[in-house]
Image (cartoon, rainbow, N blue to C red; front, side, top):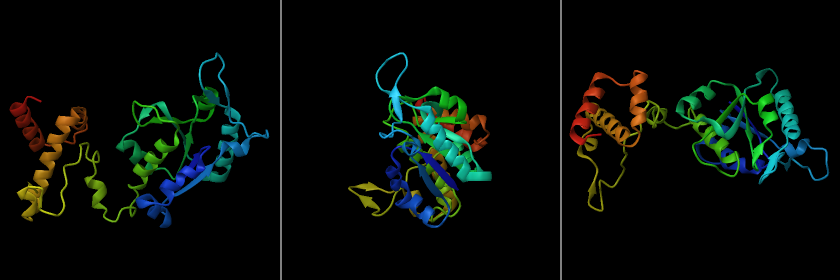
Length: 251
């Protein structure tokens, strides 16, 4: 899968291209990143990409022309495999695991990483297909959100993880939060690994983990329980266990 990124800080993306799961995926040819600096598409000596906002107010606004020229170059380079343009923005739709899976189905995608106060809305209106937000908070630019989205997508590519079952067990893959996990030693500071995980009975372990996942999700993200129910991801045993929890704890 190919990711094109329009950013004034292309060096930041070495964090995802050179390290960990994402770096290995790129070494294996499963994914690639190409960065495009809008400063390279300016015509003045200072390589200006921002200016003051009409109507006043604090902060600068990224100009439409350098960004649009960068996007034209991206589209030309992508050719017939041109993908959608996504802007990382606090005003965007909140990113989730389903969105990561949807992006995985694309051959190419282009991210625009905003900086300063905002991007000229006319560029957004003309060229952006979708806006994505990581949540209800603001960071200094779109680079870190873009890398977070790419990481979430790349780990879903078959072969990117050493164990394919790791993806299936991730939080949100079945609509719920993941269960707790433990490793050696069996006794750490008088805290013991649950007995069921030590017995080697796979069906009992799976049942324990499923119930723990349900309980954790109900406690911390009850909205996900409602969504999983709407999507038909809960079976009768799940519903019976959730009912017992609610009767016991008053969730």
